[in-house]
Length: 97
Ligand SMILES: [Cu+2]
Image 1 (cartoon, protein in one colour):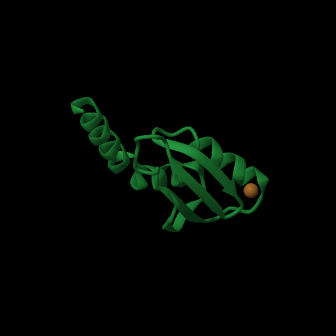
Image 2: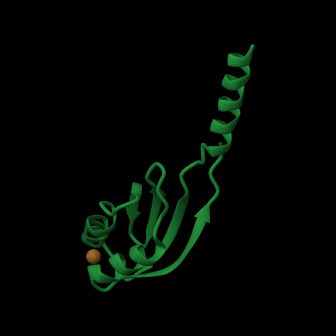
């Protein structure tokens, strides 16, 4: 009986802490072609805390790696340091459970 109770408690707390990784979408200024996409990919997709990384011309979607959060300051800096690009705006994408 006690074991079942503890098992149930564990299950409940796991549900509470199983946070979906956050997803953000970015508008990026200055991107014009596939080379721009490659450059931005190179500097952002391998960053610490970045899981899924999808880059198209002018747009980027990032999903945080498991248990990590996206460091918006570091991401904006990485985009800027790539060359003539900058994060114009970004917003959180609602993910369904
Ligand atoms: Cu380009």
